[in-house]
Amino acid sequence: MLAIGAGQQRSTLAEILDVLDSELGMRRGTIMLLSPDEQELRIEVAHDLADGRRRNIRYAAGEGITGQVIRTGRPAVVPKISQEPAFLDHLHERRKSSEEISYICVPIAVGNEAIGALSIDRVFDEAVSLDEDVRVLSIIASMIANDVKARQALATEREALEEENLRLRHQLADTFRPENIIGNSKTMREVYRAIHQVAPTDTTVLIRGESGTGKELVAHAIHYSSPRANGPFVKVNCAALSESLMESELFGHEKGAFTSAIETRRGRIEEAEGGTLFLDEIGEFSLPTQVKLLGVLQDRQYERVGSSKTFKANVRIITATNRDLEKALTDKEFRQDLYYRINVFPILLPPLRDRKDDLLLLADCFVERYRQRMSKDVRRISTPAINMMVAYHWPGNVRELENCIERAVLLSTDGVIHGHHLPPTLQTSDASDTIGEGTLAAVSYTHL
Image 1: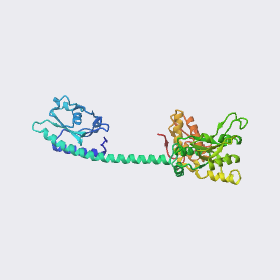
Image 2: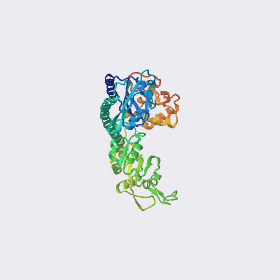
Image 3: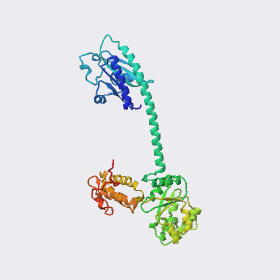
Image 4: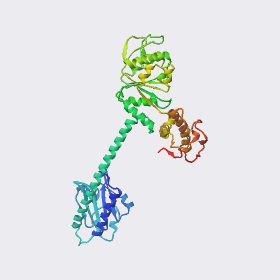
């Protein structure tokens, strides 16, 4: 059941009790509705009862006379509450009255389901027909039920719309903002859109960007959003391998292929079978290795070092580089045919200095990550520290920001990251905890 009790609803119900007071001369009146879990009755509005006391009164479902009315769906009449032991008197006032009090309670029902109760107290009078009060109250309860039913229908429709909107928002977020990539700036939204476009295909992707911009995260996002998501994701850091080891690492080798080849070894392409091979820093490939990689891209075939057996390459290849490949082409350091093969679908990652709108969002993420890892209660970055971060040019990009925040969380002793907790490269004249007016960082930054 939906909770109906917003201001407009409560005002309407209060007006009904005012009318009953003037027409029936009641001592007190209440309209109670079941809680959303249908476990208890709550007083929604009351006549001659302060709001503070109203909010504190609860009836368990089925408790007392009121609970029985809800359970059975039938009215209850107590001519004299002083003579009725089942009357609970949660207010602890009625039995103290010098006058004898009568109590009438009728169900508020939608269809066959009781959703609440309308009750009144009135001074006992033998000349008054309580059955007539039941008839009048039942009519009023029916009107209340219709009003509640209409509001429930509106609330249900509103909830459905809100849930649908939330579902669509989550769907869009999942589609255009892959997990673990942070940023809402225009340039990052373009990156999410590119990921969404290329992920369902086997198209070769070239991710370009400065060191520390998150090229590997984008490669992961493409892989885990693709039909190959259940296959392996294998990364090769081309910059970390010498020319002599590059071919063996990539294609594998047979036993005895060279002096240290004491056993047959699978290469990274074979390990990535059915999944994605991520070649990071492909600009570091030697020219001989480039020729062999070109064969994989063109024919989807390769041979292990020291073998003439041809293997099929069932892999998707994603490459990344921070080098100027166009200059490498001019300098004859990179093959033109390979360049065109890997540059089918380029994705350019912006440096952090060009996406300052995302800086505090990233900082927030890193503070939360490292305060949890270090079990430290760091909740806030001071305004001067924010000012310094915004003013800095971040040559190391997101990786440098993460390292900066990790250091600051470690050094913080009072739950706040101050300017002096940041690396010396960031500590400018803004390092004191005072700033001028009109800066972008003149905003409090608090982790909730």
